Image (tube, rainbow, N blue to C red; front, side, top):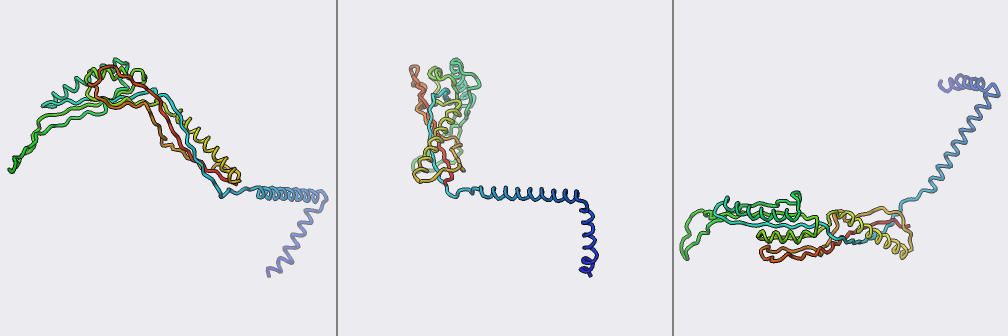
Length: 276
């Protein structure tokens, strides 16, 4: 029934409609022109797609990895010195009074050398009790008793940052005259080390690139694009030949000579290239 309806009703109707639409030569020409332009457009799209597929380059499955190390040096411009003292007395107040006098005298000398308050930091302040030791008689019983406090130690430790390294010797001399019992430092550093580290990294990258070119030539391959890079961004490393040691300030009789030297910064990088 459906086939009969299409064959004898729908198909003749559609044929008559198309004949009516294309009954004039102008309309027929316009339709043919539109269909022709559509055909040309589809053909151009097909050619473009075919050419794009033809020029596709798949990533190379082969790679080489090279590494490089670079170093850079700089003269330190900042020094840090730590100092402290310990006082002992039968009670906390007396021990604290003693330590306050020592530290205050030391701070007066530090500030007289031109160090500002913002560069002076207290690292620690400790109070520790002393206990009487119970002595047991030979072959006898030890008395059962709690240890008794016999006195107290009060200690304080301070760190000073010195931005003018020519003042380091003056600071150390002042600490010695203030009868500070121990001094640690100086340790010389570069205040802003980013520029020096960037220089070291640049040298490391240049070395890695040069090694990649040599290796590719030896292997008879061509270098492709870089697809991996890493460096010791956690900070790298640096060595210094300008770090002073700890000494007892009371043993220093004259103004010390403090060479600054230079610091060496090291960076390591790793680069992976595709090869073809």
